[in-house]
Image 1 (cartoon, rainbow, N blue to C red):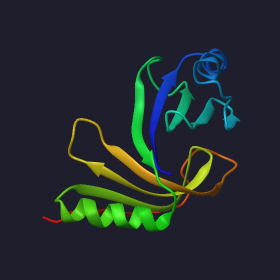
Image 2: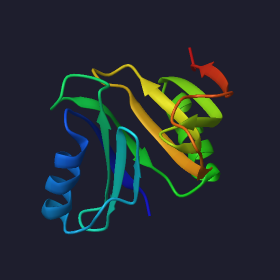
Image 3: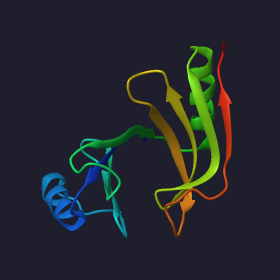
Image 4: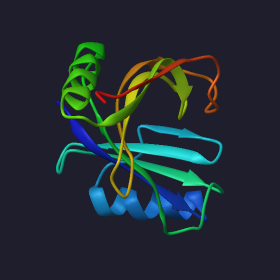
Length: 136
């Protein structure tokens, strides 16, 4: 099942974890240094908390978590056919996971469409193949 992802900048990760655990009735699926994520079934949501990355209380980024690489490939094809500028990354380490993803640009906020391939010990990007595509 696909779910919308909201990544929020927070000033106090422990307090934010407590708040969102009580709000959604589910604890975090992953907690690392300065990072936590929640997989919420109702409403379908991937909530990501990032400490120390931006002004607390602001949006870090938005996206959609997909079920697998085939769905990412289909989203790339769809976005390019509609004339969007996209940035494609394969096997990128981000948010303590290895991911295939496409960023769709052109609106006020870029959207990340991604799938998690496996867990990772760190959050920073390591090696990834990035390809910019456009139908123009």
